[in-house]
Image (cartoon, rainbow, N blue to C red; front, side, top):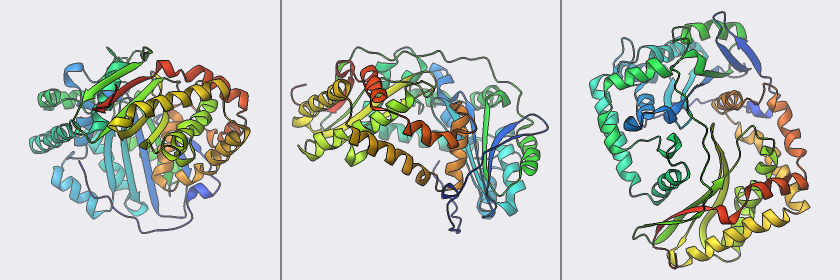
Length: 432
């Protein structure tokens, strides 16, 4: 559901520009959170994640995690949907949930003065969601409308087909948004079962930033999460091995341009080659106008409107993925150039200048990404999900600075096989 978000009219020096200390807080009841205190502003942000996400959806109920997440703020405890939303608006509280393949996430932002009420509303949404008929049918209708629109989006069509091909037979092959036929079948009992079985303390990750002390947070953690089940169901998502067969799949659409998605197996976040691969991808296709793909495909030859690549570290698989959009008559040439750049990086690696510039940018731009309390709270959660350690922020810069030319060449040789690229294109590309 799309809602207006409250605007906090406070503009001070971002916390990311200051020294940042991450503290581990464990409540009397054993609930753990990572905390960054910031008492300059009367604001608190909390991010939570429950491990599991849409990958745990039954095949005949795909979209269940997302539909559940969309309904958690649509009424809870004594408040129906309208009363719940009015309470949030009156107290200038942001509270919402979303679901991806690997996690269901919750987001809370409040003024310090409304802290206790905000955390209690968050508690109610997790422990006493109402799932009344009107919001269920309204959210169902919205999701189905979005799914219909996806069928007209070349990017969405390409993404769905690409993941089906890369992860055939694995839950990652299914879109977290579900299908129209599966969304139709989801009932109140399915939603309640999801909350009962999946929203448990053993799957919970919490990050908090703002105007709150460890002692204050400890008590709130127990009040907010203490009533959740201690453990979720034993459902396990198996490790996935992405396909390596390569090849091109064309989905015929009478579009003025061809939109393509390409990719291959990558690496997971804890892999020892993560930082070399991260730097390598920035040089190849992750650096916007400074990347090789943009320079060669767009700037020099004017072949594509956009071209890029990125690393996707899922919990049970790693990917390197990219996209390109161009005229139907020039798509094949664009793909040939992309493959050539994969091959050049694989065989030659980057230059010393490219490596130095990439490391400077990746370290220098990082604090700019942490421009709000909620962005920092989300990072704390991701640090725990990826098992990076509580001192990660102190070590990140050195980890990137330590990447050498040989490291990048090793990662490129491991990951960049142009013949292994699986390509899905939506349009009518000439010669393919």
